[in-house]
Length: 206
Length: 161
Figure 1 (tube, rainbow over the protein chains, first blue to last red):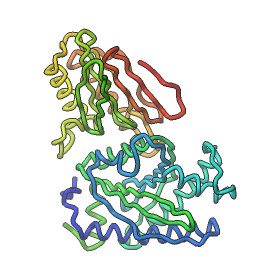
Figure 2: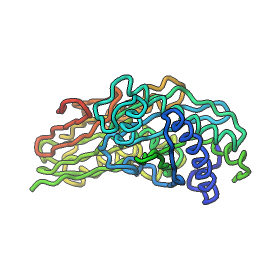
Figure 3: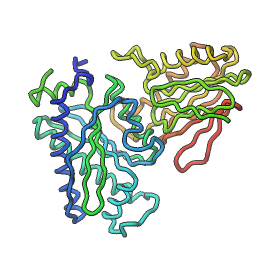
Figure 4: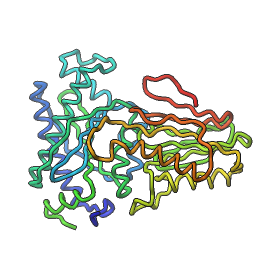
């Protein structure tokens, strides 16, 4: 067990994560824009440190249905990450990708879910490659897993991961889009030892 | 007028007839209820992890099965429930993502459900119903007038256990 605890997270570390989030989200939106043939703007990501048990209601009411894409990461950093989209944003992205009308609305079928996984894949890989570039650590993501369910149910997964070694969780919100803005949320969950590695690699050892 | 009492994540509370106690969107966490059908007093704990003794930071007792269930028992008895009449029901413990790897994300829900059963056995309180596992979230409500435990999931019919 490392000595690091999320309670010790300082402003500098949050700034670093914001910067990683910024670069990662930049990479990700560029990738998505070229995939969908869009011109995309984005805002500076917001990084929020919060009580892990409050994660369930952090992005919307607990029983609102959202899309969660989950990947495990390994090699130099062990842990997992999540990318979350509200239903409206997920539907919009899928419609773009499937070349449907923008206001088309229906329950996601297998193809839609597969498209969302691919979006999650691109976003997560872009984010991780930013982290990898800054830390010079090798980070390999697994295949993406997807769930469409109540926000609190999906967010119980990161809440439990963070809950294992403290009471705080880090949530990164990004906003991107062309005419319609899309809200996406990242949660990076390194195992305890990997926190030390990230901080050391960034020259921020505690 | 009956009231609805909300229980959050890593939280617990007690409830009396005709009120209802609910928790929204259980994922891999467990919602465990105690209910005394005679006094119609009950309670619910929504815990996240199976074992407080494995953790360095275990100050929030409602976060863990062992300490959370003990505390809930204390609270329902203090509220007027008879320990000998108490029955338990559990829901949740889902595997939200079909992860195949070695990390503990895959089996934490299952471990949470097992922890409830072990603790109840130790306390000698009967588990009368459960709806655990699988891969979807659950909103659960204990109706203290009847002791019925309602389970609501996305795209599934209401289940009463």
